[in-house]
Image 1 (tube, rainbow, N blue to C red):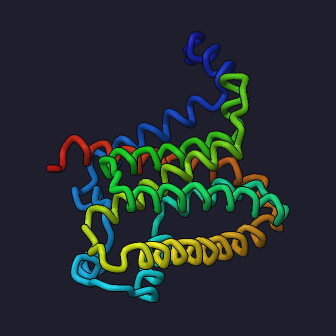
Image 2: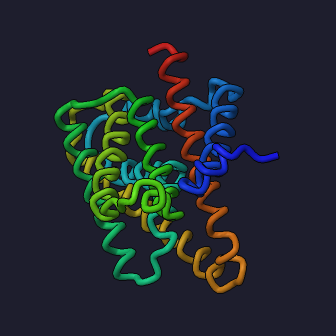
Length: 246
């Protein structure tokens, strides 16, 4: 027997049950996950390399930047959400450029000025960017609040936060100042190359999927899955913030 109060609330917020279930699943995952899942750094070998090297090393830093982006599931999830319903290359280029400008700016400024924030908190915000984009893709903002955020501005703003996340990780390793600017630029170029490679793979997969009838049937479910992943990322980082030693 249904609850009239819940039925009335669900009519007003038609996606509430889905979002609630995604949130509860993510909360459970964050609680039972091993503490290793809270790690917000890079591979141990890469971390040791960054701490030990000095001088200008353009190729290694470009490689590390590309590797970080290609293996950065939080960045890839946000990128997937951004281009999920974009079909024209011009639109894709605009949004990807806004994202790239945002994270490049804060990456460079954050490291060069030594400005960093708590890595767990910044990664939690990055997780929120994934949730935002998935909710935007299913039209939750218009249905729930009667407003539509400016997607271009949001992409730029969240790009800034993604860049702070990268800067925070780099600052943790206290890279030698000798050759820092050149290495940092090389790292950022590598990030952009990695982003283009990841984008190409996502677009190829999406182009095949969009040609099938299942895309229309499963697009909503796919974005709910992305949203759930965003909740998991937020949960991991918040639990890490409160549980793991600083």
